[in-house]
Amino acid sequence: MAQEPFLSDKETDRVPRSVSPYKAGFRCVCPNCAAAPLFHNILEVHSACPACGFDLSNADPGDGAQVFVILILGFVTALMGFLLYGVMGLPIWALAIILGFVILAGSVWMLRVIKATLIALQFHHDAHEGALDEKDKQS
Image (tube, rainbow, N blue to C red; front, top):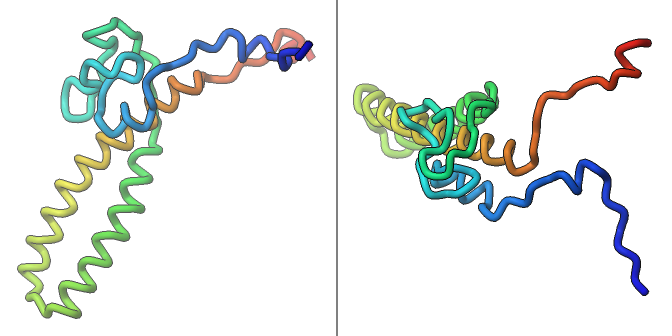
């Protein structure tokens, strides 16, 4: 008779999610039901999902999304600038207009997608703030 692998209390209490966190993040939808938008403004997260009522008040991706956007978009913009100026010989004013648009549009889009993905991953893995046990607090 095959024995089932041992599951810790944390693994048995975990609720399985049917929505892929990456699909929910890319579509910027609720990580629980994927039926309603995650944001009610450009970058403001709903406190609860309008469709399923899933509590999103604890959703906090921190500064992770901003860091990813700065690093990724900074690299892409610098590369585009070198190519447009060095290879195509565009004037500086045209370069400023093109790259300015890329930075504005790209940063808003990337912030939404990366922030939604980080929130979906946070709920998928049931991440929360750590707490010390009572034994650790006493010593």
